[in-house]
Length: 254
Figure 1 (cartoon, helix red, strand yellow):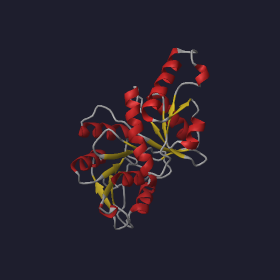
Figure 2 (cartoon, helix red, strand yellow):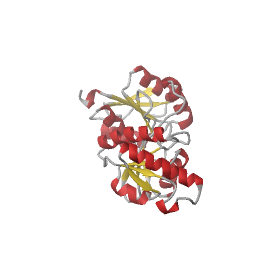
Figure 3 (cartoon, helix red, strand yellow):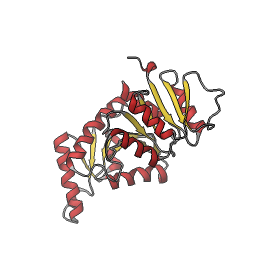
Figure 4 (tube, one colour):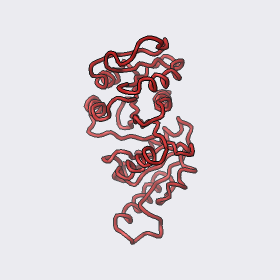
């Protein structure tokens, strides 16, 4: 079915102009619905295929419309993270969310990173599933269909600390099961050839994300949630725009 008939919702609390500008870039391909509180957006000069859905609790309205099928996919945009994700978990019947983030280095290299939540990806089986789901997204977004599995050290560091040893054993097992590359701790090399990077655990993945985006002049372009039956792309207010987050949602519909 042509993407032009699809409806993508995106939330707005702050930086309305940034969200609207991003939406306008895709308005010819899909119908974009912007969810916000009453009065946040002037209805003048809104493109024909961009609609405004005003609600006192726009995050709940966005999630409700996604769950009911009134929209085909959703992007958090600039809605508050905590209340939006709580609403999403409740609506989807899950106790946690698994996300795969699309990141971009200061030099312009894009790659997927997971796990990025502190409660995500702690077991070998969890990471194996994230590899499978992440490579599907990498293909859809035109990234290398190769995964790099990170651990806490180089091969020569084995024996220095039991936690490092455990992370290396896990990485080797994940690589064996999935056919991915055991990249050790060398993320700087892994991003050159791998479209998907698997962090050792949710804490280190979250630190990689935050260091790159908030300290390292990189960008976060959105993180699809992969353990629910609907398409929801989480996003950061630090994003330069939301075009790639919307494109991620579109690509997952195709």
